[in-house]
Image 1: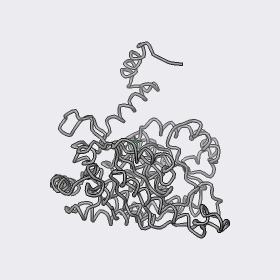
Image 2: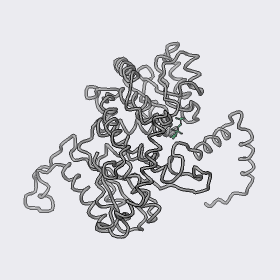
Image 3: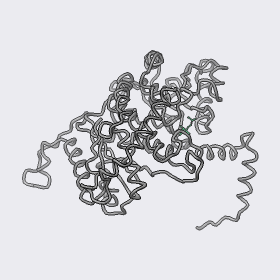
Image 4: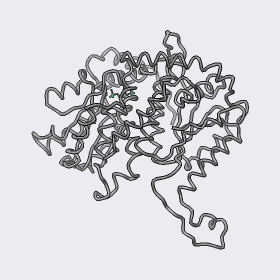
Length: 462
Ligand code: PA5
């Protein structure tokens, strides 16, 4: 994976960029973080690093997927956050756009729906087009107890039981903790097929576990190639040399931009629709891992950069005005495929009109590629630090590699910010409040606190 950092440097973008001396000064810290991470990996504390090894569960997934693809037309993934964003990113990156809308004969895998949000308008629309008789429901939750996911599960169960009677279990697959949680219990009691998420792999680091691999295999993605791409990157993410470790270099440059130059916003901008949801997946990874009130030593730090996902060239006509002329509070990472998997040529229709004729015979991919370069140039001329991942072509190999590299970068960034990138106490607080509001037993005291807060007279404008 090539990371072009030229335009992050002060010699190119001026005082808003990083200097060689600054990198040299901070790199020893990264080296020591890498050493600790490597030791923790060897001690088995960070199993996400070794997901690319796959193992026998990959074969099990492939076998399962082959049978399911012969039996079903749709797969409906019920999950949220880290249990949904990875599968969405993989589907969008690695299957043709408008995948679910394609006629059956143009699809070599199941239609894959992942509503993610428990929005009743969205969810009922998805249920309307997924006939239970031809749908596999894949319920994904690491904890096994997330309200949104279990609500979605209970919502589909009624129609499924009506349609399939006692055979309803054949339409269910659970992906959850190997031992704990409500879903594991149901799987055990009702004999529902399941895959496990390794205990120490959290939601946002789980895309290369069954969480991402099962939906991917169901739509016909080559999961071995995906893992192989990630495994290739594993060779690079522990390297101790700045110039040979794009993952750690990315983490350090983003960190320095934030803490040394007050650029807390990080925009990831792919020049490919196929990668937009990967930028969205990264948004969660970076935000939930680094946005922390407390440091690892218990100090109150309120740290964390703010990740934003944008899309080239669409956002050139929406956000780039702000990016180029607004406050100097951002850095940019462009994802630049060097070629696209489809070709669409412009026709030659108006030879006398210069404003359209220069496009004649050109490919839309050429236009999009040059637009990426044009944005790099515009940002650089306006002294906005920007870097780019240069991606030969979007494929299982490059996507697996990029996602792995970004996960590894997140752990290095956690070390730099001195926070625990693997927990999410803020998310848990929201989960607890939801349980209380929904009347779950055991949460009465939280509900009482919420009721008390509600006594405060509201200020509502109309
Ligand atoms: O990254 C995380 O850990 C979270 O975003 C979770 O994925 C999300 O909260 C859903 O949790 P669960 O998979 O336990 O249902």
